[in-house]
Amino acid sequence: MKRHSGFGWLELVIGILLIGLGILTFAKPELVLTSLVFLYGISAVVMGIADIILYIQMERYTGFGPMLSLVSGILSVMAGVMLVVYPRTGVLVLTVLFPIWFIAHCISRLAHLNRIRFVAGNGIFYFSLVIHIIGLILGCLMLLNPLITLTAVRYIAGAYLILLGVDSVVMAFSRMGRNF
Image 1 (cartoon, rainbow, N blue to C red):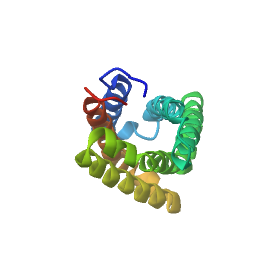
Image 2: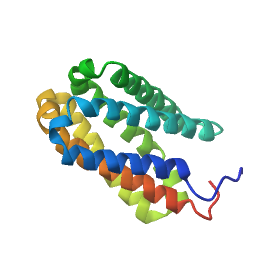
Image 3: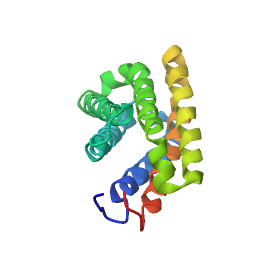
């Protein structure tokens, strides 16, 4: 088994970015559907790259999980680039793309729960399980009713981004002293 650094720096950076983005979403609600589209795009690109890296690290395993990381990563990078390049169009597309991104990311993380349990323990396993099930439910609700996305995106996205950030930071610290 290949040994990696004892600390998950990428997870920590992603976690800090997501927590900051979630706090900014709550603090400046008037910016959510315009200016923050650009920041959401950057976050999606970073998370997509992290999912692709996870796929590369897990490619030796067979099954559904590693392929979901690749698909989720590609979708996240595509969504992020689109949001960065076309932020005004991104506001309109956000009503469909944002829920799909939530769903894809949650499915990807749920597919790796056994690995999370092995690496980080039961507490983080259950925390991740609950967070990503909530994300799936929110993603489906937003997809079924785009008006929810337009009217409540600051609350849904802000809270969920903070929770995703906390999940990433906890994962970064849980890797200390363990083989991954």
